[in-house]
Image (cartoon, rainbow, N blue to C red; front, side, top):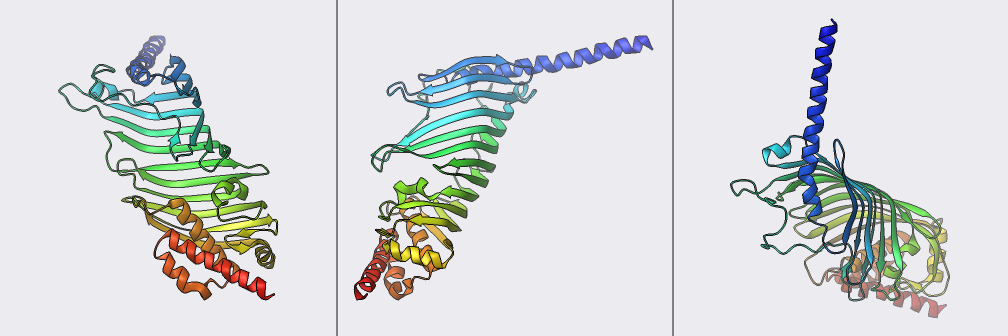
Length: 374
C-alpha cells in the first residue's frame, strides 16, 4: 500500500509540474506581444510571470508632447489558454484590467484627445518575430473569451463649450466584453457595463447591457440611468436654457440600436425634483410658467422620446437631435399645446433638428403673446 502511495505522489507531482511548465511557456509567449506596444509615452513598471497568468503592473500613458497623463492602470492580468500556443493560435481566457483610470477631453475644435496609442507603421517589418503570421504565411488567430475591467474610472473634460471643466466623472466601472476575435469577424460580442456618475450633490447609477459587432460597429444595448444630476449636463443644454437650474435628477431608459450607421433609440426620460429660478426660459418656455406646470405634476415629469438618424449624414447632429426630441416630448407630457403650432413643428421635424428647433421657437412666441395679454 505504501508503494502505491509513493507512485501516486510521483504522478501527482508530474501532473502539477507539467501544468505549471505549460503555463510558464504560455505567458512567456504572451510577454513580448505585450511589450510590443510599449512605445513613446507608455510605461510598464513591472511584468511578472505568475503560474497561470502574465501580470503587468503600474501601466501609465503620458502624451510625449503635452505631458498630459491620460491613462493609469494598477494591473493587467492575461490568462492564456495553456495549449493554444502549441497550435499556432493565441487564445486568452480572460484579460483582466484592474483599477484603470482614463482621462480624455474634447478640444475647442471638436477633436477628442485621449489615451489613443499611436499605431506602428504598417509594413515596417518590425515587432515580434513571427507576429501576425503563422508558419506558412497564414495569419495568426487571436481569441479573447472575455475582457473584464474592474473598478475603472473615467474623467471627461469638454472644452468645446468655453472654460475647460470636467463635466463627466464615472466611477466604480465594471465592464465585460466577450467573444473578441482577431482578425476581426462579424459576430456579436456581448457587453455589460455598470458604474456610477458623480455629481456635486449626489451620485447616479448607469447600466448598459447588449452587444457590439467590432467589425461592422453595429450595436444594440439597453441603457439605464438612475438619479444623475441635471446640472451634470449643463454645458449641453445651456444654449436652450437661460434660466438657472439649481437642482434636479434624471432617470432615463432607452434601447439604442445602430445598424449600418443608422441609429434608432426609443425610450423615456424622467425629471425629478427640478428646481430653478423663475427668471429666463427653458426650451423657450418662461421659467415661471414651467415652474407652475411642474408644481401641478408634483415636480416629477416623465416623457417618451424616439431618436432616429443617419450618423454618416453631415446634417445629422446627434446631440442636437436628442436635445430637441427630449424637449418636444417633455412639452407634450406637461400638457403644453404644442399641437396648436403643430403644423410648424411637425413640418419642421421632417427637416431634421433645425426644423424642429424652429418649431420649438414658435412655442416661445406663443407664451410671450400670452404674457402680453395678461
